[in-house]
Amino acid sequence: MNYHYIIVGAGSAGCVLANRLSANPETRVCLIEAGPPDRNPMIHMPFGLAALAHMRWLNWGHETEPELNLNHRRLYWPRGRVLGGSSSINAMIYMRGHPQDYRDWARLAGPDWDWSRVREIFKAHEGNQTRPDDHHGETGPLTVSDLTQPNPLSRAFVAAGVECQLPENLDFNGAAQEGVGLYQVTQRNGRRLSSAQAFLVPVLDRPNLTLITRAQVHQVTFEGRRATGVRLRDRTLHLVEGGEVLLSGGAINSPQLLMLSGIGPGAHLRAMGIPVLQDAPEVGANLADHLDITVQAALKGREAIGIAPTFLPRALRATWAYLRRGKGEFTSNVAEAGGFVRSDPARDRPNLQFHFIPAYLHDHGRRLSLGYGLTLHVCDLLPKSRGRISLASPDPMAPPRIAANYLSHPEDVPTLLSGLKIARALVQAPALARYIAQETLPGPRIATDAELEADIRARAETIYHPVGTCRMGLDAGSVTDPMGRVRGVQGLRVIDASLMPQIIAGNTNAPTMMIAENIARGMLGETGLSHSFYNSEI
Ligand SMILES: Cc1cc2nc3c(=O)[nH]c(=O)nc-3n(C[C@H](O)[C@H](O)[C@H](O)COP(=O)(O)OP(=O)(O)OC[C@H]3O[C@@H](n4cnc5c(N)ncnc54)[C@H](O)[C@@H]3O)c2cc1C
Image (cartoon, rainbow, N blue to C red; front, top):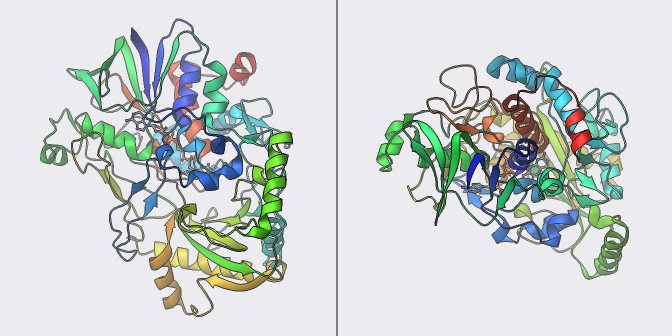
């Protein structure tokens, strides 16, 4: 069978595309996912996030090259390799970014990306359960909820922010982004709502939609400069004439697949022995990510979610409450609270974000710590450092090279340093301090700016938002045009987080789903901004 659309990757973007493009029963759509179906119960129970860190078979488990400015450390970059992609392993925070981000996008990639338009798309996706106002949609398939049982420490974090003169924010996706508060999450009835559960599963019975899991695409096939299909390990799938291949493999895998298919920096491809179809120097370039540093403290009491024999009765109650009613502590998304601040009041939008965790968190959850503690993350939202994805080998099964180049821009060091100082002040504010036995990281011995900077270089990690590696733009140097069409060839688009022309000041899941929706609308010729599609279809 030949397809009108072949979508590579069933992640945040791919599942939205599969839904929208297969709505017409005449259109044959094939969605291909490298990972397995999302059957593991730890995906669906929000706190299962902690266990997912140990399930390597659901995760690409990338590592960066040794990072020059982070003491030559290789950083761990988890990415979902399962139905739903990273939306099946992420922390479920629902965040759109700042309106100013999209005004920048409109300047770089045209009016289809202006805030006034993308805001309506966010609203069309959204099924917000507790914010019935003009900022939100209430009937979309992406259910957005308040946490069912936030930990008392998360509320104490918000109170600590207010004590530090930060405004309390009851809705980060409402009138203003700035301030501290509890996050809203993509959950329905206390269960994770991945992109797969929101957009794909409800339409899987469409006869014109084929889903293939556990199948990694190795290459896009071409006749001349027109894409004709994709090659898997054991077979080739074909497009109908005029059909399109849509790459939604995420910010690491999509540029890798373009390069494996002969589209990328010419000299690099030749060095890898790959025939050059299109010399596209920016494929893999412009890699931006949110670098993050933590403050950690040991607690006097047992308010946190802990690893200790004394936590066992609570864990049993939490499991029961989750299974019976979709409530309780195990519906926690771990990063329950947070906020946005400016490192400098002159900035036009917040450039630091906090994620508060009422638990110890070490090495992305891969290393377990006994006892009761808290972790406050802070990241630089608008870094100027840029990195690159390149091939390590022409073998499609070999992981690509990730050079994030963190802190290579001199302005990024003072920004993260000021974030670390604010995070420390928050943890020391009375509302939190009364719970705390002692700060364990950076620790009481780290005091001067030089010591804090050294601590950042020794400990900073990703907070999981790599974007920009197949930048869309109005300019001829961009990898794709503003609708994701890869320049220099026909019948091939990239549609995922790698399209972002500039990293946004917030978490990246909802914006990636918005990107897919916006381009799907363009492909289907829907020019209006009505909300009717999901209301009538799902
Ligand atoms: C641990 C973690 C926590 C996060 N927390 C949050 C959060 O709380 N809120 C938020 O907004 N964002 C969060 N994010 C970020 C967000 O989830 C991602 O930005 C978003 O999911 C990216 O979507 P995508 O469609 O670009 O890629 P993905 O969702 O990663 O999807 C890509 C899919 O393509 C598949 N694939 C790749 N290559 C191939 C191939 N060659 N053949 C077949 N299939 C392929 C992959 O297996 C994957 O399923 C988090 C991310 C992580 C990893």
